[in-house]
Amino acid sequence: MHLRHLILLLLFCPFVAFSQTTISGKVTTTESHTGIGKVSVFLSNSSYGTVTAEDGSFKLVGVKPGQYDLIASSVGYQDFSKTILVDNQPINIDIPLPTKVNQLRGVVITTNANWKKNYEEFKKAFIGTTENAKSCVVENPHVVNLVNSSRRHTLEGWSDDFFIMDNRALGYRVKFLIDTFANNGITGIISWQGKAVFEELPGTAEQKKAWKLKRQETYYGSSRDFYKSLYQGTLEKEGFILRRLHRELNPDRPQEGVILQKLKYFRDIHPSRDSFNYWVVKENLSKYFHESLSPGSLEPNQIFARTDKQGLFVISFTDCLYVIYTKRREEQDFKDLYRPLDMPNYEISVLTLSEPYAVFDMNGVVFNGAPLNEGTWSKAKLAELLPYDYSPETDK
Picture 1 (cartoon, rainbow, N blue to C red):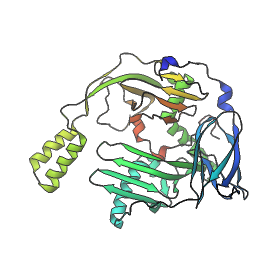
Picture 2 (picture 1 turned 90 degrees about the vertical axis):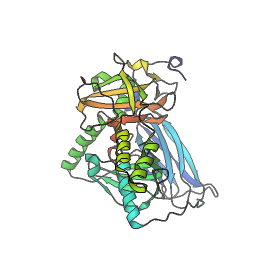
Picture 3 (picture 1 turned 45 degrees about the vertical axis):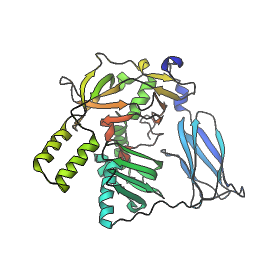
Picture 4 (picture 1 turned 90 degrees about the horizontal axis):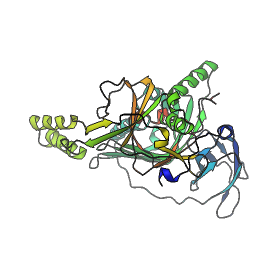
C-alpha cells in the first residue's frame, strides 16, 4: 500500500468523535450451546468491561468509536478474542467458548532469590521507573512466571491469570493478562503482548481531581496524543514538530552481543583490566554516525493518509521520523539520541518502521506495524498506560 493510492480526506467528522455505541451478545459453550454466567467480557486495554448474566448475555454501553480486541475469559474455557471496529452502529455478537485443554509449558525451576532478582528486572521493564511507576502497587506479583536465559541475554515472562496493579498516580486498577513478555539485554528492546482492562479506583473528590490532572499530564505529548493530532490536523497547535532523521550504524562499534560477551569474558572468566576497559570504551560509543535532520519540517500529508475504512489511518515514512514535542523539556539523557547543539532540550522521540506502514485508529492507538520508539516515548510502560477510550476532553 502506498500513500498516493489512498484517498485523502482532510476534514475531520465531528459526529464520529462524539458518537457512542452499544456492544451486546451472548456467551455460550461450543458443545451444548448453553449460556455461561460470570464470564469476563471486555474490550482489551479499555475501561469497557462487564460480567455475563446467568444466561450468558452481556452488554457494553457507551463505547467510543475505534478498533478494539473483544475478549471473553472464564476459568475452564479457552479465551475468546476478536478484533472489532466500532463506529456509531450497535454491534451484536455471539461468543462461543470451547472447553479449555490444559497445555503444559516447560517446567521452570528457580530459587526465591532468583525470582526476586528477575522480578525486579521485570518491574523496571514492564511497569517502568517513572514517577507514575513509583505510585503503582502490585497485588499479586507471584502470578508472573519468569525465566532468565543467560545464553540469549533475555528475560521472558507470562501469566496464567490477571496481573493486578493499582496505579495510584492515575487512579486505575489495571488487570493485565500477560501472554508474552521479553526484555532483550542485547538489543535493549522490550516487548509484550496481552490483554488488559481498566477499573476506576475509589477515591475522594480531591484524589479524583489529582488523578484527572495526572492523566492529562501523562496523555499530552504521548504517542497517542501525536497520532490523534496527526489525523485531526492539529500537530502544530498541540506542540509537535516533525523532521526526517537520517543515520547510519557506527562501523567502529561492534554488535551488542559481541560487546556483552567480551565484557563477561574479561570480567568473570579470564579477568583482564586492560581488555575489560577496552570493551567498556567500545560499549560507550554511539550506535550511529552521519546523523542529520531534514532542513525543514514535514507536513502531515507527507507521512499520513486515511484508509478506505472509516476511523483507520496509516503512517509511512523513510529513514526515521524525528518527533519534537515543544511543550515539555526532557530530563533524561539518551546516549544514542541525536540532538543538534542549537536545539532546546525539548522531548524527542525517534520512530523506526519495521513494516512499510503502520495502522492506527481515531483513539491514537497503533494496531499493525507498530514503530520502534526511542527517546521520550520509550520510557512509557504500564505505569503510563491509559485506557484506549481515554481522552482529556471527555475525562469526567
